[in-house]
Image 1 (cartoon, helix red, strand yellow):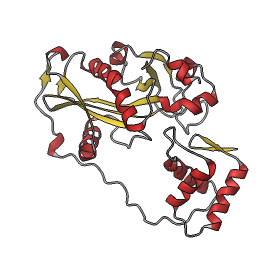
Image 2: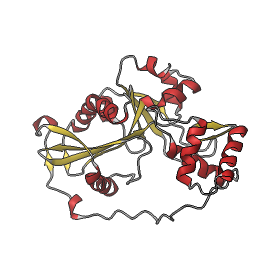
Image 3: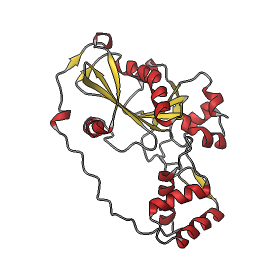
Image 4: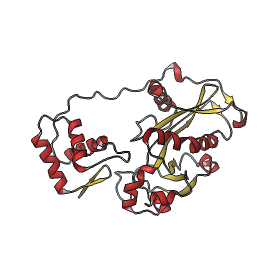
Length: 284
């Protein structure tokens, strides 16, 4: 067995993929990924083909010398650098507690506003902008149509010991049910917004609204939220105030880091149950 993108591939399956490529020289990479998904019955929880994961898996197989893919139809140009525009320039300082702000609104980012969200994150978030993995939802948090903060939610981490021990699931249960966890991958309060308790208020609003939004878009209702808070930068006070649980910390190795050596910042792992029976759902 060899593992790519959260799936184990047997020698027989690798042979099937090689045969598919050899017997269909006119298939482009996108067509091959769809055919492989059908052949191996590799589907998302909502029943759609998991073709993006399959495409990445086949690229990694090619990098490892296991298969040879046809040449891409188009050569992608390098991603454009996001340059600041007046649309994200600093605004007038707002300094007041959250209960003195106008009513907060969670506004889902649509295609039209996507570049604006990206620009704010690139300009003001310490991690900058990178595309969120897999299923995702992004939000503007506004008051009187003014943007105060931005959030992004995406696919859960494949494996992290503190979370997995807290849930108490095994490998097969995690494989079946990981899609029921959503990761809070980005959280940015704009620097000119100084409002006590705003962060925990935003988290509380998301805990109520996100499950419905996620279910409406993906036909899946999440039961647990997770996030990773970099220990040398933040204490996670807003997560604690919003009743999230600190269940431990990462080991600082990252996905590809050498065993026993710290290669990425250590992060606290915080979880928020969206359903009181979340462990039962995750351990099915």
